[in-house]
Image (cartoon, helix red, strand yellow):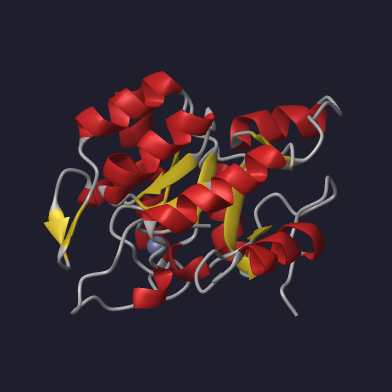
Length: 224
Ligand SMILES: [Zn+2]
């Protein structure tokens, strides 16, 4: 799980969430050299159902939909011929908010044409556990509908803002009812075929300072 790629501006909050482009490139090169195969959530679901996944599958995800996913991450992904999934705050597309520029529809289109998958991160990054059910339903359903209209294909995956929802059956039910097939939070770890499909784990790339830590995360699911 990545967020913004690049060097954080001096006044940025959550500086630790940023991964600079050199480090990002080293991590992708590591994956390439160690024969990891990047897949999408669509591939994952199909692979689990048909018991046909490549060896060493990995899904590279980005949360929030920052413009740097296009300007800095996308060229590197293309260079190594990797896929990835970007979870969009649909209400922020093409906008500037909290000092960030978010991806535009044109950038999303170009990345989709290459093979990048898009998932929902809600409309406006609200905590789905803390808002009324009616509002959570709207965040979950409306973001899916808008994305599908634009992308011309089914959106199978959602990432809970703040990771909130993966332990809450009410929220998971809303996500399932809306027609998503998988959802992920921020619980750390690797996933196996028997995993709860609406509570997939992820490995955070924040504060992963060297390739040894990266290697340990990928192989053991944790650094320590
Ligand atoms: Zn987020």
